[in-house]
Amino acid sequence: MSTAAEDIILSTSGLTKEFGGFTAVNGVDLKVRRGSIHALIGPNGAGKTTCFNLLTKFLAPTKGAIVYNGQDITRQKPAEIARLGLVRSFQISAVFPQLSVLKNVRIALQRKRGDSFDFWRSDEVLSVLDGEAMRLVEAVGLASFAELPAVELSYGRKRALEIATTLALDPEMMLLDEPMAGMGREDVERIEALIRKVSANRTILMVEHNLSVVASLSDRITVLARGQVLAEGDYATVSKDPRVVEAYIGSGGGHAH
Ligand SMILES: Nc1ncnc2c1ncn2[C@@H]1O[C@H](COP(=O)(O)OP(=O)(O)OP(=O)(O)O)[C@@H](O)[C@H]1O
Ligand SMILES: [Mg+2]
Image 1 (tube, rainbow, N blue to C red):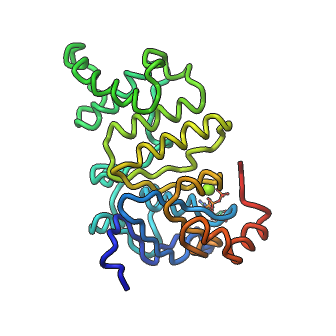
Image 2: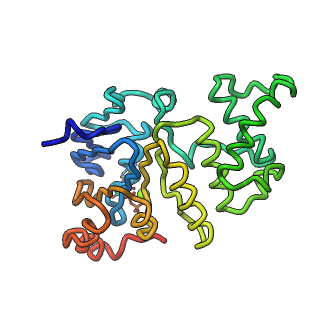
């Protein structure tokens, strides 16, 4: 087997989460290749969110291990893995609604430098960061909204801002929880292009319901059903797999969007 030759950035072995007597994630072995876009899909209740929360350390596993860059992170805290370069976007990347787009990104850059919430710094010192912040704002296509309070952005552009604040941490690996949830078609297209762009020199693992997005973005897909890995491969392979088709039909679809 050529596993040793593959460059695996994140792996799990026997990852298991029980809630009371119920096993939501059951012995999942996952291997995410460095530099890939990897999607976790599956019908409703398959265990995707639970699995994601285990990977991002929002939940502690009942059994199993998680290894990131050769280091066992099973018992580490979210802040610790963030320092190792494994960052979750969308749910913790706080956006300050009344502050401008640019200021939000600047604060994220300050956090990376370890002086979080140090609002006592002089404007002069802060302005040094503005150049870097503006580059990130441009990278996510928000240049013309840089001075707008975050609260006034459209839903899709708020998510672009969240990507910018996540990128400010310069993560080696980004974990995205349903990046397209609640988005209209135009926003989906914009965020899809953005994810593709920021995936350069990075690894991305995402849970996503929108299968056309999964099909066009993912290098590799893991299909979960009833807490277990049902199939794995590229989109063409897993979408033809009779067990996958059956799992989706059996659940009544599994597409929330
Ligand atoms: N905190 C909890 N306590 C008890 N059961 C839970 C808990 N969280 C999830 N579950 C159960 O675990 C199973 C997997 O849930 P999970 O949310 O991980 O699925 P999912 O694949 O994300 O589904 P969806 O597509 O609906 O988002 C479900 O049966 C759910 O009811
Ligand atoms: Mg879910």
